[in-house]
Image (cartoon, rainbow, N blue to C red; front, top):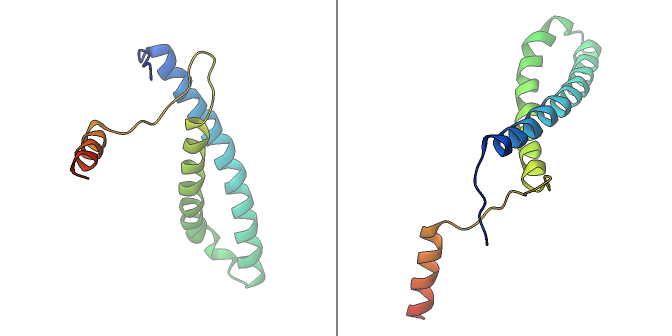
Length: 102
C-alpha cells in the first residue's frame, strides 16, 4: 500500500471532520439525553437534581458519541485520500515468525 505524506492540509481536513461532526452529534445526543433525563427526574419530583445527574449523563452519552464520530471519520473518503489502519511492524513480524514455525 502506498503511503502519502502527512501534511498540514490533510491534518486540518481530518481535524475539521472530527470537530464539526463531534459537536453536531454531541449536541443532538446531549439534547435528547437531557430531555429524557429532565422528563424522568421531573416526573419523580427530583427536578433539583437535574444539574448533578445531567453532567454524569452528558459524560456517559458523550464518550460513545465521540467514539462513533471517530469511526465515521476513519471510514470517510476525503478528496485526495482516505485513512487506513494497517498492522504494526510488530504484528507483521510476529505473523511472519509464526508462519515460518508452522
